[in-house]
Image (cartoon, rainbow over all chains, first blue to last red; front, side, top):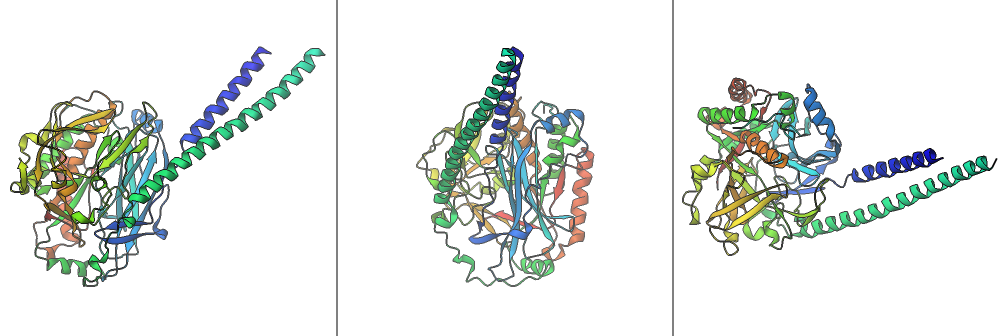
Length: 166
Length: 356
């Protein structure tokens, strides 16, 4: 009977811990509908939105890196093109987005691509809390074939795996 | 028999208690969520208070401005070719997302060597947004917050990174104590950009070569403050920025004259006026990190040496895909020398970068 009680307690502990894990991983972020840039109002272009598409590009990781990679995960991500149609030349666009992750430290970078080529990029940014926000430079004039991408990475050096002293 | 009844009773009690616990757990989570939602709602409210749309931003600037219509890139390039002060650059970025695949223990030294090589081969400039994190209760003015548009200072953008200001945001790390975080407007600049401002420091001094290398975590990083900070801090003050696990000392070495700044980005000629900004040197860190957080800061600082801008020497009318490919292959050739060919990318559209 003691075993049953202990078993039951273990099940309850599991349920409780699972709940707290899920509670901790709910996204609290959203993309703003409008961003002001150089006094101009850029509006989120909904068709270009690519939720949960952040790219770590871990293609050929070693076992050590795989371990680091798998230690954390992305809770949510979002990226979209922001467009201003208001001014004379038909409008401009740029990419903005965020990556929300469980890693203590990570980076993000937003870019505008067109036909497999990098049109405009932004600098890499660091996370604040569990979120890293990023925006690209402006892609002047509107081009329908443009799309937004967001990249992230974490943990390459958290265990000193890829570190050297310079 | 008694044992069987007892067992059944225990099972029922177990199931009921489990359900009760799960339900209460759910309530507890709901309460937590409600409280979390309140917190988020409050955060959103706070952000709304500070959002650009509520800060009476005047968007009239371009409404009356006649800008020709561009159907494509050629038309746009023809337009900027006529602008006398446009300084075209190809923007480069370090691909952190590929670092895990690099498997190169000496990558930091290689990046620094590549950075030096790029500086030798090109007219290369670093000028990038690098907001500073203030930990504790921030009681300063909102105009210093990254993402806040202070139109009185001529500001007109809440980019490049923040979208919305972060002021006294409660951060709850998985390890360690919760803390309040505020993100302040700041840029980092390379040595040759810094030299452009030799005559623009009202008080104190401009950056010198020694400011671009940090050998110890305790060594203060020199900063020059915008003119709005002049009555708040004085030369020699030490400010602390970072997060609780990786805090750095920043030493005030000067103040810029009002209105000093840079122009960055494309036709929009986005102006960054330094009045409300903290400007730091993009230094090369050689310190030994004492923990993972300092290790991350060091890696970030080194990787972003390649988040820069290569000046395009050719006349603007000659900028086309062919020219872009030629610059790109030169950069990749240099990267290959250092084993970093997958670690850098170059944007196709030229960007403006110059002193305001």
